[in-house]
Length: 313
Ligand code: NAD
Image (cartoon, protein in one colour):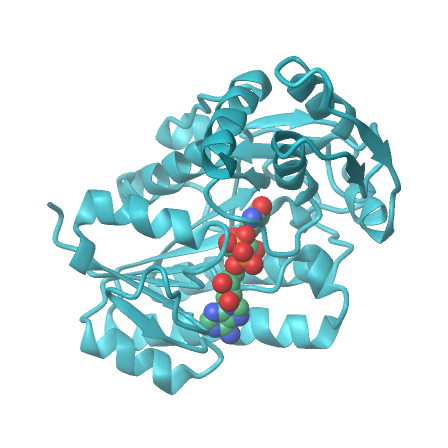
């Protein structure tokens, strides 16, 4: 077992609830402290209630558990964030400043900051390179681009070891998404397995970059475990799994569930999707720390359906 003491902030969310278990498998149960706004009734061990906008409360937890690494997952996501832009900015930035400052003052050795493909905007057409122009269209994307620049600032100015991935939409059977533009790609599997009709909030050809949870977890820990000298990008690494449209995921599901039906009723999230790239070039991540995704669309579909069938049976 490795001798780290890890704090996961925002641990009850789509990624956190799966990542905590994954990290505990690597570092040991008592070495991974989960925290969120409310206790998770299913997982109360090694859990701290924390509102990360409260810097003093965060500091007390970091001191009490002698935290050496922080995974800062708490955020208001892209679609939900548009409902109250200034509050989204306030929460996303204040929580991150608290993490950066507590880490600086208490010698936390490593920070993981999840960025997003939402940092890209209208000036990136088709595929986004690592160093493509960033002109995000949502307050969420603006906060992630700012967070990336602050990560780089704390690295350059204070030598802090902060690592970051620009996650595409994450697809998981273990947990539900929390208000992003790519949420449909999880919901569609639940509807298919339950034998229900699916009404999609994006157009049939809205191709977006996505990744299966298993690949996202692998990338996250691979990045965090890479030797420091291998990390050449201190803003946020582009990360790609697969790209597909609603029509393509529907067709992939129909190979397993032929009776499944879909309709398309695009809403405000279509405009957000249109402002994002359809492909991500992640060659820097591949070159620097050996990233390779393991899942294709059809392989993911098979596993999602198999796992959700167990859940609904
Ligand atoms: P989520 O919305 O499912 O979970 C976020 C968690 O943060 C929630 O449990 C929420 O209660 C908690 N939280 C909110 N405000 C908090 C606060 N002030 N203090 C403490 N906790 C607070 O999000 P997720 O999908 O698990 O995403 C985790 C991170 O990854 C986010 O930063 C998100 O921007 C990023 N990300 C996610 C995706 C995706 O597809 N899920 C894609 C790109 C980036």
